[in-house]
Image (cartoon, rainbow, N blue to C red):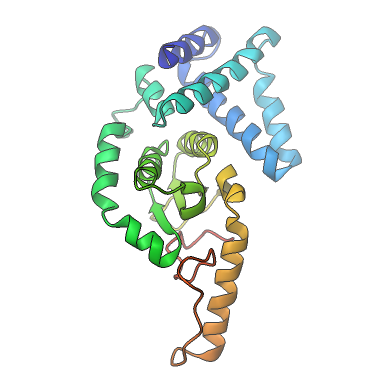
Length: 256
């Protein structure tokens, strides 16, 4: 199945009233809200969803569900930056703003180079963290997760990412793909350079991998270290336990 062709074709059909960029952005917001609502259960999410979907005719509304189904199928067949590919295929990238998504093959190469020796890090510390300050559609995070799979680990259990971008559409794209691929992550909408956090969303993988408990234990251990003072040692868990003992490598603004 030509997933990218099918996806772009539906966007084109929906763009008779609004332009393609609006339709694509609406899809990303609608899909992200739907996925987030399963965990957040916020009335405001429901209200935003209804406001967006009601812009379209009843016959058109079902096509947004079809777009999400195509995305699920595409990522199941081949984990990659599918939405980033569609964004370029629809010629929505903005050369004036420098908004171009890195080809996934390049992201895989960069991940392979950056994660050399990741097996030893995971065995020593139990998991690794990645901070992506300009995440785009999440391609680099997906590439890193694929490299961890290649090393023989399940990213749900050993990998956590903080992905941030100033563009809300990009954050929605990243959230959709990281959630569907069960990659534990916090997606932050805001300007990294200004330490800005407008909104933050946790992916499905965050809950599937018991990360709330992990970070709870890390805060507790860090508190004990602070109370005892830097000069005294705190008994550390065995390297193969799930309790994290490293200092946080995530965004300063991310609050667990």
